[in-house]
Image (cartoon, rainbow, N blue to C red; front, side):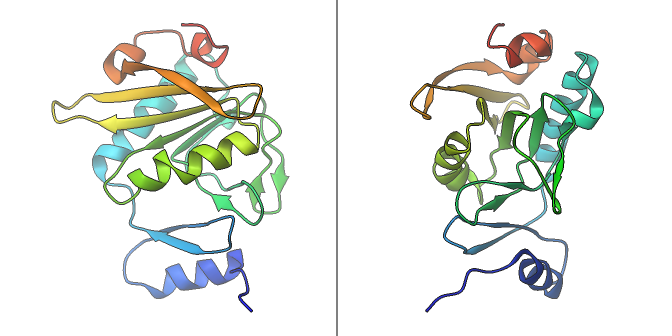
Length: 178
């Protein structure tokens, strides 16, 4: 008999390792330990967060690495989450009722999960948009925007360079425009 790991046990496991580690729990109850975001990922997350705030989104609705419940026992900490209203707390986790978009920035260690498992998990909880960001060698990044369909699957999305995205209206992207 396998017992799913608790958030408290995940915290203890991450704290026992040298350095600072992020963690998530898969819907199957497996612990996933990740290295901290690198400087390039952190810069992209901050650029996107600032863009949303400049676009009029309340800063309390633009949260980096906030814990959210996905399906079954899943607990994820997306690189950036934007909510339509300040999320209520569900224990230490943010409620997904007002979730508008989840953004994951690829790294070599998380790309497979960001493109696979998380796409399904975020769709199944009804997150209207799921964005992935791939840092490019030229210093820019490719943003892929997926929108949730009626069947709770993401539709093939529009791609845009981060440098171009940051010159547009953030609200237009949240309402499906732009």
